[in-house]
Image (cartoon, rainbow, N blue to C red; front, side, top):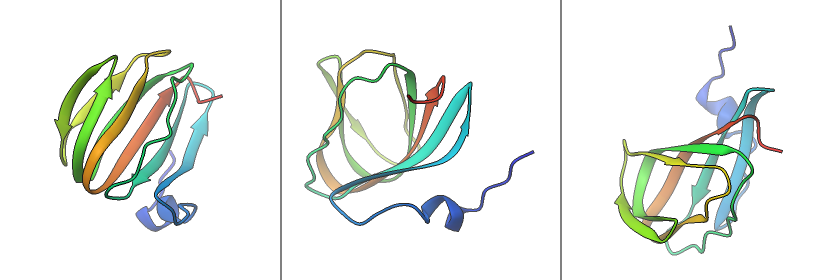
Length: 105
């Protein structure tokens, strides 16, 4: 069993308009926290792994393969490997739990 407290998850998160910190990794998956401040430009690019986002806090939109949708706390987003995606029109700082499978390379 692995138990990671919220303060440990947040420990590596740097200041800035877009910040990511990984807090867990095994070969099958990795997990981290991603924060985008209100008004930030999301610098993401397609990943080699499937990805899940769970919105912890904030509001904005997500664009996946050209399709946009509003996001808010409690929303779950799946992005398949290789698919273009990004968050935009961030009106309240987004904090997202991110899981990659297999682990992000």
